[in-house]
Image (cartoon, rainbow, N blue to C red; front, side, top):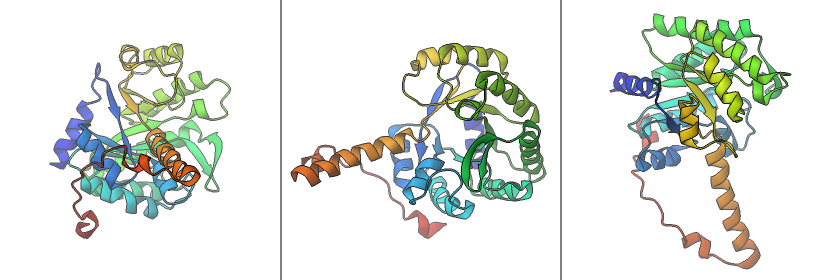
Length: 276
C-alpha cells in the first residue's frame, strides 16, 4: 500500500501533468482535503508552527513538528509529503536521521529548502550550493542504503531571500539540486509569467510553485511547464481569516449567525493518536 502511494505520487509529477497540492496542519484539515477529492496532501510548516503558538523557521523542534505530522500521515489513505524546512539541523547526520524518521512513518516525500535558519530565525540567506547539494546527495544515498524511497522536492528560496538576481540564482541552484538527486524543484515567490517560462525552459525536472495572489490561472501555469501548485501557508491563513471575521462579529456585535452560516463537515475521525 505504502509503495503504491509512493508510485502514485511520483506519477503525478510526470511531464505534462498539473495538480494542486493542498497543505494540512492537523488531522482535521488533512481529512477535509481527502474528502474533497485531492489525490495527495502536503504539510505546511507555517501552519503547524502557528497552530502550536510558534513562528515558522524551525522554532519548533523536529520532534514537536513530527508529533503533529505523524497523525496526519496515519489519518488519510492518500499520499502525504512532509515539509521539513531545512532539515531541522545544520548537521547532515541529524538531517538524515530526521528524514529516515519521516520515511519510516509512511510519508511519500519531503520538501527540503536551502534557507539558513540562523539561531532558529530565518536569516534571509541561503546555504552555499555545494553545501545544499551535499545534503541532497546524502539523503539520496541514505534512502538507497535503507531501501527507502522518498520523492525529494528541493526548494530554493532565491525569490524570497536577498539574492540580487533571483531567477538566475534559482536556475543555477535548481539544476545543481537535480544533479544531486532531487526529483522536483520548488520555487516559492516566483509568479511572473516570464520568469516561470524562462525557468521552465532551463530546468529538466518537474517544477513546483507556491500559491500567491496574482498568479496566472491553472491552464496558463500548466502551459508554462508548472507541474505542482502548492497551497503553502495560504490555506491556514485563509482559515484564520474566516475565524477572525467570525469572532470579531461576535465580539463587536454579539452576532453569532456566522457560527451557523456554513455546514459542519462530517469527518471520519478515527482516534488516530491511540493507534500510533
